[in-house]
Length: 432
Ligand code: CMC
Image 1: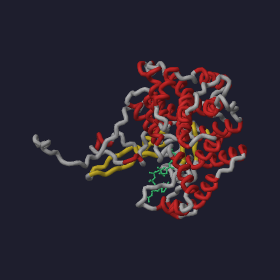
Image 2: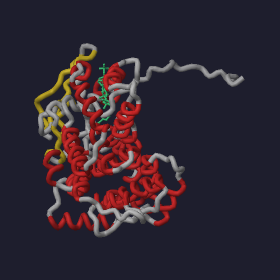
Image 3: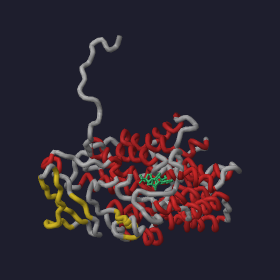
Image 4: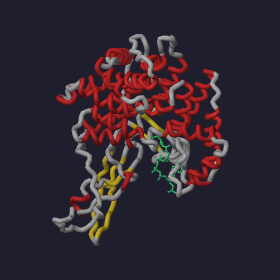
């Protein structure tokens, strides 16, 4: 970030002029620095949902919402998805650089060493009701890790590397155990001879009566899908992770909160909602694509076209473009024909041709095609957001570390404009 001394914004309040510094990022993003505003003027800024608020400076992820570009640590998402594994990208996000051969081998070894869960944790899965959503299990189990590894709570600085390693490795095991719990199948332990994604697929799909062998094409596709979801700068769940961490709460607690934030259908839960929306069109002959579009446009109806629209992108989400290709690759490779893909493409074409979506710059986002890809692999719909969480974990960790180590770090604490009643006198007999 280059900090200019010259450019300033002038603000006039009650006849008095204040100069506010303008800061500029490396890619030309500009912001008015309002840090001293309240101290100098007594006023705060008002920005519900933070649509115009830059909450930090960051050197992790860059998005250009008008051009539809996305970089992690300066590398484009297209290059990373094509040439790296998910573990390479996790390393890149957390450490700031891509691993060399030796670092890559060590990191992969660490992922294997720490992949098991404490045996006592295994029993917790039995206590959830059968219909428990795996995102609830994931969030609960991630914070539960802090009870098995209390050193992070006691001495966060010394144990950070091992905590990061444990989280990245064990999240797959937790996710797969949650799936086995839902299926009522015996859990499958991680294996030391399998790569990060192959290991996860094996824990999901191996059973005593199905000697599952991870398919390299599917393993590559899963790596790519997780890369697409690995970070997205100050999104809702990353902001939650940082807000929780800003109070000094440990990394397990912060990530657990991030999982909960991701669960919502406006965020990571949209990949599940997309499939449910497509299924409802398929199962109801009276519900046409056009009717769904009309519903999404109706301001009296809270329904939205899931997998469409984004706070930052004003054009096609670059991740959606890659996800669409991956979806076709998986289906062609497996010889899968899914009617939901046909409906999705029909829906996409109808929305892109509709003035409502054109005027608002609403395009498919990452969630539109990732769910269809996961479905083709055989992952059930309610696990899609869990997959998103596995993908997003390195981003959450990188954002949390950057916040913790940054010079601007203070507890997150927005202000408000109170619009409630004036002070009232309490009637001592109010209860009668
Ligand atoms: N369907 C219909 N209308 C929409 C949609 C949609 N999917 N998205 C935005 N709009 C309309 C919105 O009603 C508003 O219209 P108007 O200007 O007439 O009031 C306008 O477009 C601007 O939308 P907004 O609500 O101000 O946008 P936002 O930045 O607050 O919300 C969003 C972004 C992603 C929550 C929203 O686009 C949405 O709800 N999309 C559907 C859910 C979804 O796919 N979420 C995944 C997002 S990408 C991955 C991730 O973040 O996890």
